[in-house]
Amino acid sequence: MSLPRTPQPGLAGLALMGCVTLASVWLSAKLPSDPVDERVVGDVRDHECVEPSLPLFHYTSANVALDNILTDGTLKLGAPAGLNDPFESEPHWVNLIDDLPATEPEPEPTMQLFERASDLLRSKCRLACLSTSSANESTSLGAFGDGWMRARMWAEYADNHAGVCLAFDADRLSAAADRLAVAQHLSLHAGPVRYRDRGGPAGDPITLRSSEARADLDRLVDELFPGFVQDLYFRKAWDWSTETEYRFLVHGDVAEAEYVDIRQAVIAVFLGPRFPESRLNDLFARCGALAENRAFLLRWRNGFPSAVPFHGRSMRRVTDWDLPPLPLVGTDRLRPLSEGTDEH
Image (cartoon, rainbow, N blue to C red; front, side):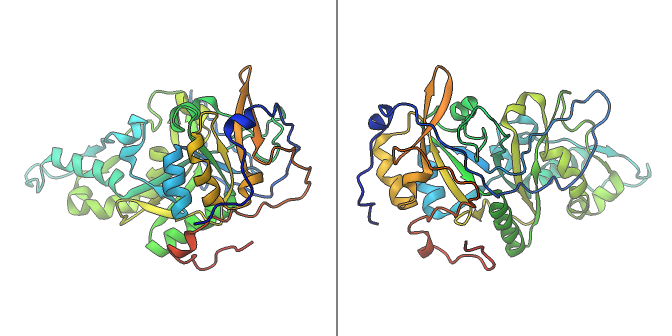
């Protein structure tokens, strides 16, 4: 794998360049709409952050970004057990209405039925978590909004500011998730997470009739899951609202992990201020020559972030620019592009 011939400035060199004012760039990417228009009532504060003209963002470590995502050209959809919200990673106990006649013997102990129902609500799901962005006039990267500027996200998910924030064209990523679901015969649920200020995001537990659950629990959970999915995976407590999350969830006979093809969706890479300089060559090897003006180093001045492009010059103003994907070098040899992939 060959490296770009043009020598790239190190992080120290970029730090000496001073503040670079980046002109606004406009993207045509649009976020998919929330698939279910639900109204939350009562004392619940319903909140979602969606900006329909901005990308989706994924914070991760430098190693995961460079050795997995950008090398394989895929984004992992993992099991709920790997999430950091205990409402999602821990079992969700259901209510079981005992509607069996008292004289009828129970074919399965109640506790075992509880455990199986909880497992089915988790084990047949795989999901990827990203962040949305809102328009923010205080940033000079008008096309990207503030999705890359979240200090807490950099600290928690991007290796304490040493990692990476990847920007995705939302339409292309959504189309790739659709292709994954169709190819694997899975159902796809996608949309922004809504945040509520009551303690339990889902309200009352899921209720099942004992007679139906004991007859065929797997079939029952599969049939009812579309009605559960919003409360289980797209509602969170207000504590998490600063993540302005957007999720892709597939449900069905899933593998240990599912992978969505992101080769036509990655449009920019943001590096934390502590990104290891030893890995800069890996970045340019994977992203090709376009990384020179589509990779940005974050710098914090008095608590406010700015992004310095690697070419070291101000970006020219572009008023109508639908950004093409970054050409991830070497990924074409790993697997063919899915049918129907947008090649622009």
